[in-house]
Image 1 (cartoon, one colour):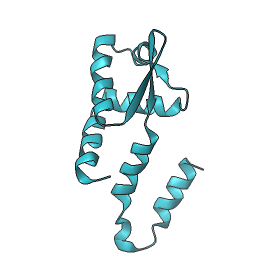
Image 2 (cartoon, rainbow, N blue to C red; image 1 turned 180 degrees about the vertical axis):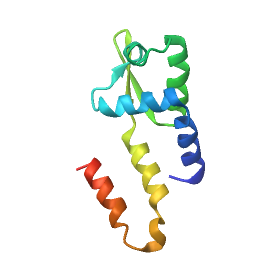
Image 3 (cartoon, rainbow, N blue to C red; image 1 turned 180 degrees about the horizontal axis):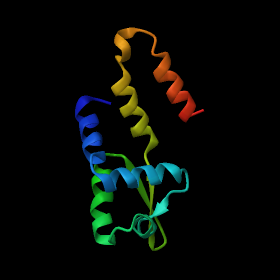
Image 4 (spheres, rainbow, N blue to C red; image 1 turned 90 degrees about the vertical axis):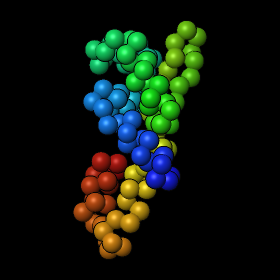
Length: 109
């Protein structure tokens, strides 16, 4: 991932509802959730949710697929992982990042 894509992804997540959407979708991997269910769970009007999902999609943080009449959204974990790797690429000035590695291992065993 490069600086521009990282900035786009971070910008998309720099809003409460969009961050909540992304976190919700991460918790529902790999099945994903329909757009209407996301809106209902987060108590956001569907037209507003559509805008948020569009922004997350443009930043490549979510993917969608049609399932009959529903659009199912999923978190794009590859983009999330690439963004985190980019941010940590030069972590700790090349020193061992044990505290950070321990935190990541604790969250993602």
